[in-house]
Length: 448
Image (tube, rainbow, N blue to C red; front, side):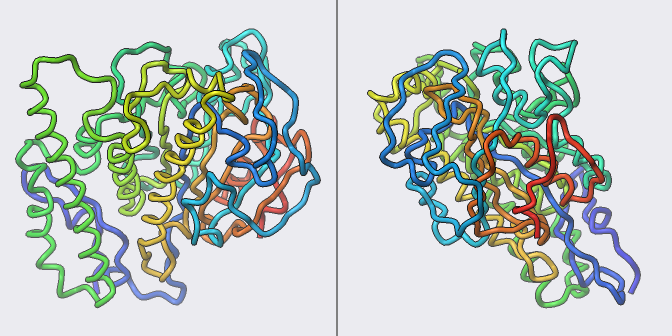
């Protein structure tokens, strides 16, 4: 059977280009069948978390007072380093049933660079972990981020070396780029995020005309029907599942556009929240990210679920009856602890939705997309009230193709740099690094 490029055979009319999952039926038989590609994805949560909801053993801990600077006091009632079976804390309950594909990693620290804003260093420096004052050309310890470093290894053969997604729908630009971007090509050179689902769809699955976007699956299916007889039973199932997911995204975007056009006829100012309910908006952006990872459009993606220190409120549907500023209420945890716990769980529910979606996508070798991905949930603050940079909330879903251990809670020794996790992940993805940023070594307990 001749080799057929899965990207070239779907080059449809009118500029429609759509990428497919790997089909084993289209590959040349070999003594050593190919393995699914490894992927890296990061899900960033702003403003930290309420520790008593996220960290095992802290459910009855005293609610901390607000601290406007960097607090080095460590809230770790069980600080003994070690590895144990994972038990989900209340905020993590949406992940129930997925424990065997998760790792909770506690005790990881970042170093705060004095003289600059606490929140500005959270997201912008989360994936760079540069040592304080090591970057002379920046007020922040901001260097090239992990995603771009990893893309040098696993992103060279994909149409997009990396993709950056943001769920900040606000247009008021209250803060600088350092509060609202996770991914950086290098110091001072941001990798701008896609925020609009329709623009993201056009970039990933785009055609030249709006009508072609609505009908992109029909265009591609015309090209693909002639190939159907070449596919085996499992590939036909995968083919059908894939196009069902793309059609669902198209329908969601059409509903969003209709809603926007209707709202444009109403004489009132655009509300601060997205036109779509916030959860639906986040999940739609997440669906686009997962589809890009599934189809081979990219192997590396970052997903910022909200901006740092942006006081313009969001409407969290189903939680509150009016828009809420996550940042503002985080400064009074004693008064708003219940609301903050609800927000933490809300963001965890969206993460759990994406983890389940990835685990439901079967690769050609029987593994799942999640199995072949390192999907990290994390924040640049250990607590939104104390602004502490130590003991950060970190969860990793997936094993990167069986390279990392799952189903465990790894409690690292005091002073373990967050960069140790990034070094461990980079190594598991095939990079030959001795050190990354301020790392002191890999996390041995995480390695298989």
